[in-house]
Image (cartoon, rainbow, N blue to C red; front, side, top):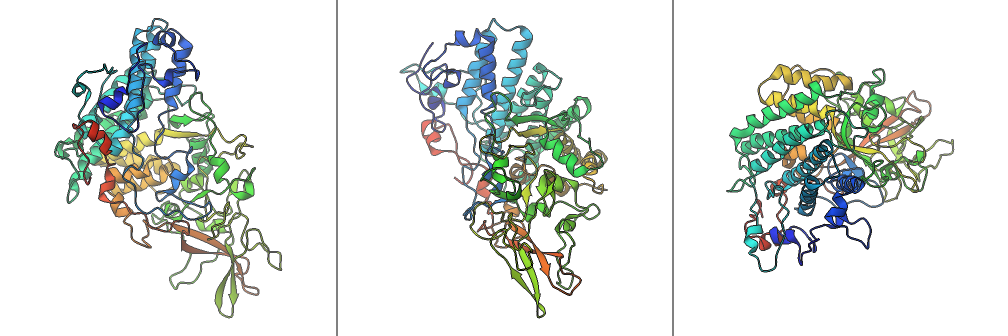
Length: 614
């Protein structure tokens, strides 16, 4: 087995903090004190599968349930544990991916796989399809943050002391070339992979590859379209950032073709096993693995190679239902809740005051959310909604009618007044820096595990995190058809999604409808940030303006009415408040559309050009 004196990839690009590598990388090391040779790895079926499983555990970036805090940085949820966050601006490296060590490992594996004699041709083909898909997935995650980056193909570079390093220095591809490469690799992988569903959605099959093709093409199409509609399009002279507008339709056509192939020929479908309980149906379609027809590919923490159980449920379960000391670390914010429509009203604002500014009274706080899009109840635990069969009491305090005015009374969580009524519930919400108390008025529902013991530190949860699901194929088809001027086809697709949510069909469709539908369908699924970037809306939505309805985080606090002798005594009212644990409105600047290139990369390789605004 060969070794090298310095990192091969460091010579190529000097990306990130690569340490000295061997031609057989650390990922092939099965024991801390032993490095196995290529012959040992690729002469053993079990070892080959072990390396492949390891790859699946290394391809998670952006928001995911292994990092609950990642949900609080956008406009979906806010941090409730202890003091406020100080975030305002998005960093130049936010969710940046540049993992060429992993690309090299994929290429090492492909080389050894093709030379292996212990696998039959079918096994070799399927394993190659999986790895080429995972490599394309890695490039995709790089591209959507950085734009075009070097494409090294199947090369496994070896550095020999004294050689000319110029031959190892690759320039950045254009953004269009990068998406074209990803799309082509997905097409190739789809023909190698089995068309049936896997016994576990953690592994790639043909439909997973086609989903990445569809997503990559719709991203490229929207970038070619909407970037060029900006007053000053964001681009570099060499096209490393920026896709020509005349390429948009070709990408939309590829996205529509791939999405329709999944829709029309795959074994997946929009899950509708509980038509009489659409909220429950939506929760199960995302969060229950048994008999699932919706999820196409997921990071499944119960699958080998995907890592240990995650503490998302442990950290975010309501205190009233907690099984350990942890709870209520974060909660959905009102910004998201109000983006879910009512059944017959597209304005989803919660009705808390009448036209004269007087409180609207509810017999039960849950009544304020009646006739909402069913996906809301499947994604968010609302005040007094059920979890594990019992109500989650959410009460900020009392509204006391006193001499013609309303007074707000709060308490330590769980305290009662002289009449025995809870003032501030054990779940909150409140506006203190207190740990374990909700600050937004809402709890997560999506991805919160109902299994007994799943919220304990000793067990945690094996909940999966979907990366591709059937609904995305439908909404990609809707978007692509709309952009290609096929209104009736686009409407047919988007209304399938809306029908499952129990809300009114659309009679026409615009890009705003696409953005809105994806916002509520894919809440907490690592889509929001990337969607607003590709549609060039992020700097408009997250404009940094104090008390902006979108950039500022908002909370909704329910109060029990204490007004003895009046018909409203014992009812509930709500206050809309700024979310106390997010001090600043989110501010996305034009420079944030692309991550900055690390200057160390350019110093090592002068062929690497910088991104705009650097």
